[in-house]
Length: 315
Image (cartoon, helix red, strand yellow):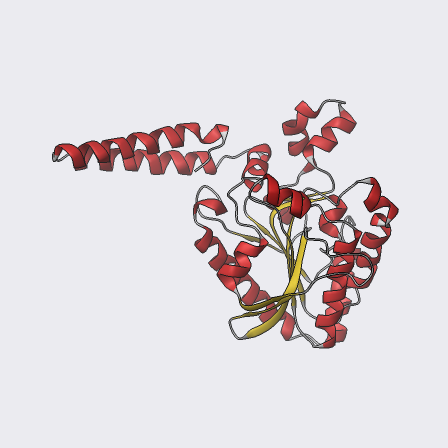
């Protein structure tokens, strides 16, 4: 498993434990007490390391190449997934996956950013950075869900909307702005979960929902730390400092009332135990959908509007 810089002591100790176990197996000698001692040391080291992560270290976990993506969670959590393609205007943007599925017995519409695992797939998925047609496809599926009274679950995982010339020519800012306006009035329960990166308008373009949840080591921000550092200090190397001042961690966001809930991750991050992470997400979805289902459509829309209008307002 690929390790991050701050995880090196953990990885080295894990390697040492495995080498000792291999030695014991080969030599047929009993060193179980030493193995237990090292495993206890490893557990304490993990707890100390992951309980005191900086904002920049959490961003590194949010970007971990082995972190589960939207299609991974769909495969782990849902059945009968039918992907829907195209915006009926230009093309099918593969940076956003949309479709219909079942979560248990609940029929839902599912939308999510999708990154790639290798260079070829990342080029196909545009590194999770959607074009205008991606946001229009997402809106089309939201409106379809509204017509069939289906709840909408959205997985957010993008560094931002694609800023290329073609995207701008096809109305990137207009597509995102349209989604912001229209999502306020979609009369179906809607929930967004930031599973990795939640960058800028690229994230918010599918993030105007009744509930906004963030995984413990994910982030949600108006700009990436690198972009912020380049603007403020003309130096992308100051990204760790920018990460601290942006207040983009799940814990910061919950304290400011920007999000509704933090979904816990296994010790070390979602990539260390994807199934456990998926189970935590499933429980959060079911719990929140149950509360949203109890509201009338009028209450749902009123509360969603008030939720976003109240952000940034001080007493």
